[in-house]
Length: 459
Image (cartoon, rainbow, N blue to C red):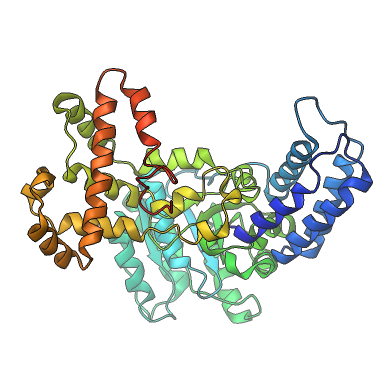
């Protein structure tokens, strides 16, 4: 996410290092680079001008603290202004009303409204412990209603049935009434995609809004459209009282123009980001964390939250107890760890949130992949329970059978067994006397450049 912008900012901010004082002369070139970085990121021109002027105003003449280099002082100023441009802090959903709280989803065709409605339902069910009813008022797109019904089943939400021949306003009204009767906490109403210049369709969504009086009206927009996302959101807000924005496909947005433009142009906060196709891939939008990602500082807080919500705590405790009791770690345990990593979004999702990613060469980044994780899981799946429990019995004939079953080469099986052996030794050190220090020494051989390698990360 924001790869291009992060790279340009990293180059720009290098120019300011080594100065004893921030002056207009020595930050001129850096500000020019920052301006170009933002324009190339497709940030709206008024937003770029305002941002650069504010950074310049704060930076010129600033005495550098004895504990900070000028580069660090300038980066702090840039980060603060990035946060200010995106809205200071996360703005949560307002669900403080007599249930059901009604959420209306609006936006263009293809922006991902239906999937976002499902993701939001899952978020509310799992994180907020709310009961959710999903309803589709999209009577125009073929199979839209069936799609939402399927998603409702996948995320554990109730579904209000509707049909293509019905009036969208009646569907929405009856869905809210059904929510009241069933005592659900939240009703999410999905609507058809529409252009703000389509008068008939805009009148329809105004009627839907008036009929159900939603406490949240969320505009769903594709991050890949850059500053156009902000302009479209502004046009919708002039016709409909939006309360916030859901930015979809943010994981594929290498530029960042939408995230940096929406708040400044519409005055409305980005409340959520869609970070992938999976129904769990929805994150609350935290401007301070996103600013840190843009500047290559990582996002450790989001990574911790990701681990807390997606790691199976019961399985983790079970493995910990087994390790302490038996001092053994087998391939079944190894596979369980691979599955946990997949649940967290894989290597790419985790790496995106780690500090210092901007300093890794592009040649190395291009080699980072989740493919090795999937390959390793396939190899272990191709083994018998006995082989997973006792890897020592896996000789050449078994390796050939396992490789054929997983669709890989024997060398790949050998590589997995070597990595497993490294991890097994590390686990034994962890559970032995002075375990933590021994483990840290053992991990050196498993990190990039240390010999063993970590799945998905090049050595």
